[in-house]
Amino acid sequence: MSKFIVFALVIATICLILVNAAPTQILDAQTAINKIIAAYNRYPGRSIVHPWEVATLIDPNTFVVHF
Image (tube, rainbow, N blue to C red; front, side):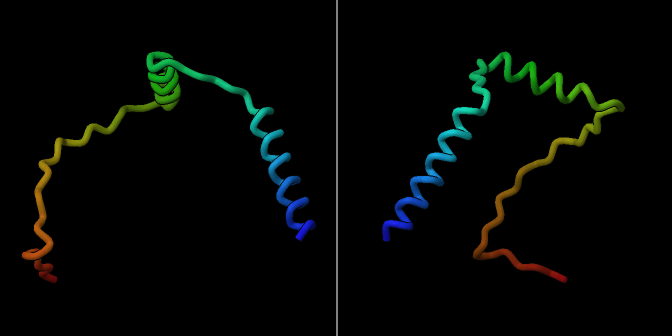
């Protein structure tokens, strides 16, 4: 039983070290949006614009699949 406790403590210690080693960046909403747009603009070419789709409600009690 003590081997499992020691193993769990070692794993927990490794996880805490890795979490603390990771860079912490807390972004506000505007900065996050700007980073997403900048990452999107790195890809060349035109964007594909899809038409709007109308959502329909499917009743599972009356839904029938025709093959």
